[in-house]
Amino acid sequence: MQIQKGYKQLVEEAEQNLRAIDSTELNARLQDMGESLLLIDLRDVREVKREGKIPGSLHIPRGMLEFWIDPDSPYYRTEFDKAEELILYCNKGWRSALAAQSLQSMGVENIAHLQGGMEQWLKDGGEAQSN
Image (cartoon, rainbow, N blue to C red; front, side, top):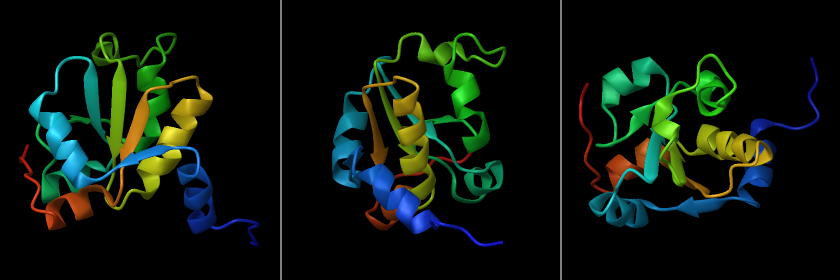
């Protein structure tokens, strides 16, 4: 099989039209996180069990995001009812960039993703809670 674009190019293209935040900004945002901000962990359940998650985040497996956010979906989650802003993260920031791009194409406007993902968060001294 031959591909026209690799994942690196897809992520680079997605990031050109996204708002990305770093660990410092996310940490500041978490201090005054209310119901209007929803922090979403897109990693696989095995990653969450192994490394924990950023406190206050909602785990949504990457493959379910578009279904859980759409009110017309039988999988819709009510956590989105009060959310005015979404911040997505994964392990390295690649899946979250592609996921944010997908949500933008669905019409979600106030969205960002964590540069470097959970890996960078932990490297920068960010807290993780176990499940």
